[in-house]
Each structure stands twice: as C-alpha cells, then as structure tokens.
Length: 227
Image 1 (tube, rainbow, N blue to C red):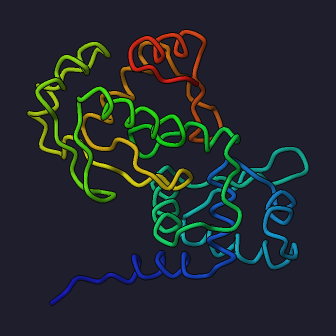
Image 2: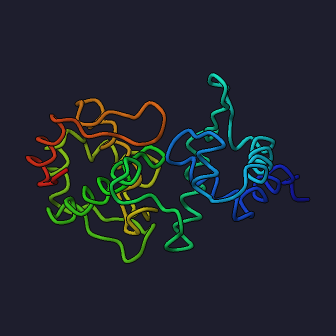
Image 3: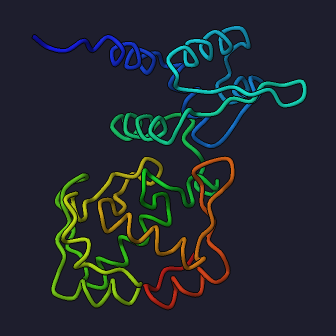
C-alpha cells in the first residue's frame, strides 16, 4: 500500500495558488516585509498576510521581528529551488528579477552557480572544448578529452568527480536567463573552488553571490569571462 503522502500534498498545494507563488518568487530575491511584498505583487495587505500565514503553516517561510516590522524569509534553499523550477517550466513570468539585480547576475542553485554568471561559465567551458552541450535542458553534458586540462586550470579535479555517484555534469535550466548553467558534481566542485579562492563571496541574506576584484581577474584569465 502506498505511503502517506499527505504532508507532501499539503506542501504542493501551497505552490498552486498564483499569489503564494508570487510571494515566494519575491522572497527568492531576499528577505522582505509585508509592505515589500505588497509593492511587488500589487495585492492588498490583508490578502498578502493571509497567504503568508499559509506559507508559514506549510513551513515554507519563516518570520522574525525586526524593530516594529516582521521580516519574512524562505525556509531554506530547497524552497527557492522548487520555486525556480516551477517558474522555469512556465516560461517568461511576470515579476522575474531584472537582468541587473544581484539574484539575476549571480546566485547559487542548490550547490552550483546560476544566473548570468553561471550561464557564462558553462558557455565558456563549452567554447574551450571541455564540455559538449546537451540537446535539452537537464540533459547530461559530456566531458571531452580536454576537460581534465581545462578544469585543472581552475583547480578542479575531474577524476575525483568521475568517481562520484551523482551526475557529473548536466545542463540545469536557469530561471532568470532561460538557458542552462552547469549542474552536477562538477558544478558543485567549481562553486566550492571559486568560494575557497575568494573569487566570489556569498550574500548574507539571499542566494546571491558577488564576484570580487580578484575573481574578475581570475575568471577573465582562465575562461575569458567578463563580469
């Protein structure tokens, strides 16, 4: 007999309402007050507050008082990933962050890089012959004979990633760019490397990341990526 999926069904139902999805989409960009969300969605404060209550009950958002206001945040990165996946599947969406917002320029997607930077990195790796493109989003990427050398120049060991049980490399459809960025074990290894090297720093309140001056020089030198 199938297991009890009532909890999963309740969580799934929270994503089914267009306004709740719009609220979650706003929170992808970072913490927000009710007033911030009202401005972003164009809905009334009582309606926004009611939907925030539902999202809190489903453990999709958290709330913390800051002075006289309550600030809402996504519960964890997994919530953001579900929202991004839904929005990516639906095509262009109202309220998508503008191209120059931090979350659109560079962010994390689970454990790899996304946004304009993530897409540019995958394009550069394909252009340098390290990876062969997948025929569709979420398809596997193939490592070429030159992959070890290209990734080694970035400080990433492809042999170690080959031994991993997870997918090595795949084209993860980017929500804001509508084109793939690098997912999988190699994508995760690349993110760890650029963080360890100080090429990027994580934002304290969102999944956005910021390229440092050192990172700008390194990415241009190694991959020809301008940031």
